[in-house]
Length: 305
Ligand SMILES: [Zn+2]
Image 1 (cartoon, protein in one colour):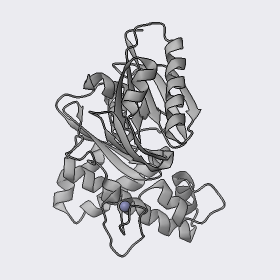
Image 2 (cartoon, helix red, strand yellow):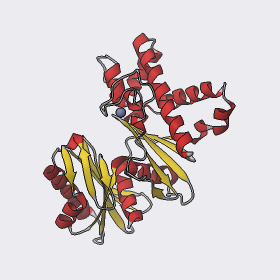
Image 3 (cartoon, protein in one colour):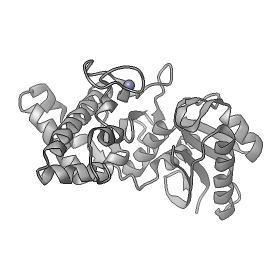
Image 4 (cartoon, rainbow, N blue to C red):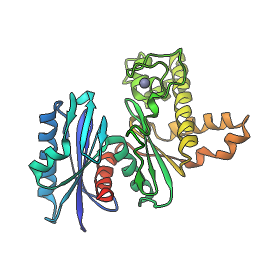
């Protein structure tokens, strides 16, 4: 084992932690349920970090990367408006450093996952390419890696594609707009749209549609259309060499990929422009079982220092 780092991914249901090296190899992991509130979040991160350090064979761990939802000011280590964790504003880097006495780097969770998905799928972080990661989870957002760095934009909201309104007559979004992409292209949308006794997962939706259930077929068509809209927006706005599809919906695997590719191909039959973009060849599904958020938080910390 070479030099290792700790990567932490604070999700709304669980906190994942990994002991990771600079190539993304994971040596040890730990997962605990998330508790809301600033004090609990800090206490739980500290406990996961201490658990992992205690199991490290090397005692030279000096850098911790943390990915967390909400508005993250990575340079100052401050997080704001983490609604699901009941945090309005928190100097996370400062608080963790005072308890752990280690260097801390804080990153938005989807940006960290973009870094993690990149190193997991490419086995390196390419210095000369753009790679986009799309997180189709309870909501929808993207992270973009360009020339080995996370793109943050001027306000830190780069990649918030879930809140691009595409249809003003459609569903009201939690952000206050109407017709945002994530009101259809997300796990949260499937759970809201599909009334079923089974868990409203993408796998079950695809299965029910294939079994001929009318509701499931209609909802699946809507969701796939919106997912492909989001993929096209990402492809055309950032022109990435790879588009990595992650989040809970990616659990549906190859059947989902086939539906996405079929819709892209259908659109391309009438568009030479879209054909030339060859988006299907750039798509890779990332298994949600791989802790890309925690891995990427560690890698992002290394690259930021
Ligand atoms: Zn919205």
